Amino acid sequence: METFKRLDDIALPDVRNTLWVATNLETGEQRKMALSDIYESVALIDLHESVPDDVRSQFNVAKNLAVYTWYCYPFHQISELKAFSTLEMALRMKFGENGQRLGFKRLLRKAVASGLIKDIGFSHIADNVENPESTVYTERLPDQMPDLRNNLAHGSCTLHPYSEINLQICADFINQLFHT
Image (cartoon, rainbow, N blue to C red; front, top):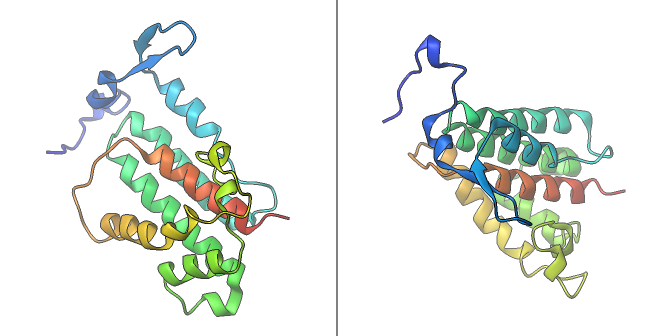
């Protein structure tokens, strides 16, 4: 069960983070994970300058929450929820008046169907995409992302440490929306 942190413990890492190790891929050397590991990883997730400032601002909230998971592990899911809501905001901005009446799933489908989003634009799979026009991965996102978002938004006990992965996927999606 989650507990309310004592004031004296606020600046201490969530004990669950002390169970993880960072591994040097070149040497195989392992050490305890540190706040700097999370920060450096999240700092690499970025939105292009062509993305509207309001979207970049809200995405930075999601990134800050991801860093603060060091202190409060369940912030992983709050970070993900903020990233998904920022993606929805970006979709509404991209599609203007027409996007205001659509739900998240329909906005995602519209972005994919209009050719704005391609598999090659997702950093975690880009190296394995043979056809630059492929949308095999992308076409699954309109069904998966709303389910993930709704699970978080409508009450659940979901807890996992993968907010950085979903932040990157949302960033890649947003960057493709506003690619110039």
